[in-house]
Image 1 (cartoon, rainbow, N blue to C red):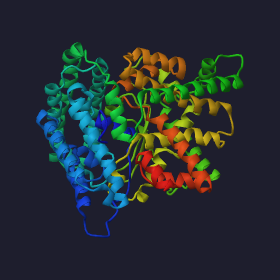
Image 2: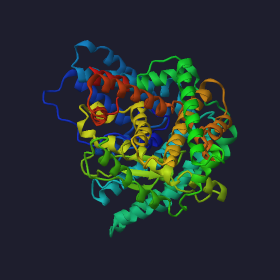
Image 3: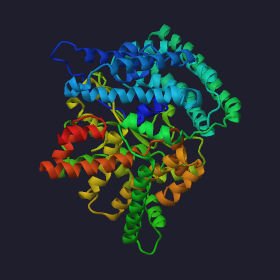
Image 4: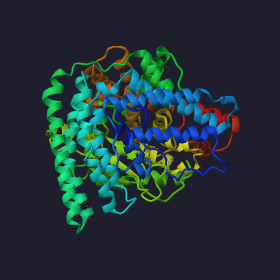
Length: 570
């Protein structure tokens, strides 16, 4: 669901949200460091008020981000000032939890500066803007934190500021990669339908008998629809023909993103070696498992026989709803990890504005949200404008064995269960910030771990599905590096997804194109490997059951694994 360090705030807010719990009250009076933490997050949400709403700070509900050049320049200046303030703390003298938070926040600040000041994604990525309108209203619609009419009034104020966001894109974006513009067009057109349909329907219901409120919405929504249509037209007719920019960020910036976002220090040759070796290992295991299922077929043909069993477009979401409970029951039966709540996530369609290459995602309520605590497990449906071949290839991904692995990843014991541990996260920073090698690494680790423990009844089809999910992440690992440091095209990346990841061609292209705007999406495999290493060290040093390690790991929050290692191994 990537907050602060993503290339597009809206999309990655959905790929991996964090915590749901009121922030822990401090027993003592505020310290100089705690005031810095408060100032950092206040500044962050001032710059990104829709993220403020998402974490449950509802003073931001009527505001929209200033995405003008002046707005970004102010944010860059604020980040430099915060970095200067942070540098004045003696880390060795800080309490342990504050020292951990200082390290995390320094990475957050440097990572955002890398995006805004060095890579200048706001000048090169129209997706950065295209997802904002939908996110801004969706967070007000889907969570019942206040009476619907009150949320509608906040929405109307936000609607009035959406044309300014889209205008800023036209002023700021210069020469983006073609891949970014193509996805922005999809997002903008999807948003038109979203505002015409879901948003208008909700708003009219929320207005109830208040004719003036309904009329006020209709007036503002009409302006927004015209702005979105105009934006989509500008993207397609003006920006797309001149979208000739390069998406590659280069090895130096690639490693810097890992260093700042995930506190990973590694050389590029070693990073690539790990990915390619794991890809080769999982590919060999996939071929051996496929042979076990049907030795008369090639591995791809065996996987295709699994994919032949898939839901219809109409039954896609219901089929996921029917299947998710099996993963939760397995955790409890096998005592894999403590499940701290009976509350379930709601399984819904991915909102149109967020359909930028994701097939499934978890969207959890924010750390400050005390009333609207619903979590959403999103599944991306078939688009209405897809031809039959594209729709079929999309649906084949959702065969029952792969869906079982997606359920493990997104819900139990992956993202949703980690979110349920949020009340145990010890500080404000660790409730509000996550790193992807931890959060996505944990969810991906869970896929292999559960099958190793017998999820699916030792059915080789389940193992094959787990290995295909592993190969998918292995290919992301390698493709991300190749796209950004070795001059690969998206088409070359897609070829690897087909040949080594056994992906359908349409899905392979989506996956490779995602790597263009999400360069370090190797964090799934990299994080899994680091968690497996930490698990083995923890159990060797401390003993106990596997559940002890799992409970201890998820209780730390989504902090970099290097920090979890220090905490757990002391």
